[in-house]
Image 1 (tube, rainbow, N blue to C red):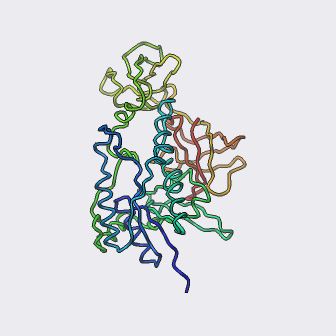
Image 2 (image 1 turned 135 degrees about the vertical axis):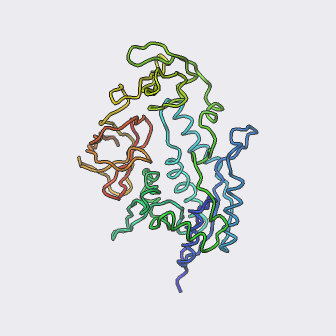
Image 3 (image 1 turned 60 degrees about the vertical axis):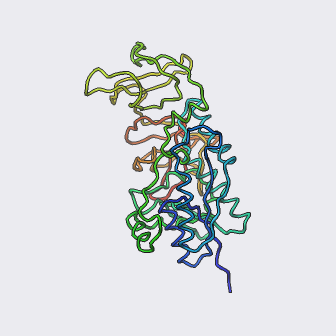
Length: 362
């Protein structure tokens, strides 16, 4: 008799991964669960005082006990520091806008955690992502959007590689969020009513600027109006701001209907450039962008094509003209103008509901 495949589920403490484990067990897999211990307040500071990791572990352990599956806490703190935290801090130090959630998926969930699972005899890892995996006749895999348009998380997997996808399962990708909640209630999962987590993958509710102050010293400089370089105020460091930011600039607007917004950062002069939030504000809106460090899930796009792109997570896929270039770069033309696409953010490339890959705005 063939032994069932062994699956290691990444239990986060939330309802989505809990239902993922439930479904896999119902489907006959040999399921175990693990909580990835990735970042905790190990240094005696209070920067992660609001991070709910202790409650997350308690909830994940309770779910595993309810389902009757093995549970462990896997210590990946150093790997996380090296692969995600350093990427985040270095990105802000260089003045770009990093995406730690995307990097967490590639480097941790389907990187270090996947390797841990393979080393311990598991055939695949599973998560509570709202996306779908399709296996082709040649054995390769494609990644498809989740069926719930309000919860689709395929964007966050734009940099996942083919060998990682082959070892991944997404049990709830065919479900809508209300269906996931109903399954959790029906099977009396202990976290059935728990609210979804918010915020950066390891910071939770912690303010990003509060976090960065522990790693990047402030460097005060001038806040100037982009049109005429008139000095309007002082900032504490360019790393505290991103393109399109409207809140927290510290310069009052002239009227109730017009608001200042960040339109650029001049690192040579250490000046923060602001303008009113208008369509014609320089540097704020655009249709043509360059991508670098492209990563393809299956087959790379090697010739100019009309595709779709998700400029950022909450944006819907929109038509683009994609033109590949050398050395993993490309140019991309959005049919509709896009607001505040910052260097370092990730653009996800689609063909219909199939995620082809992604790259970084340069």
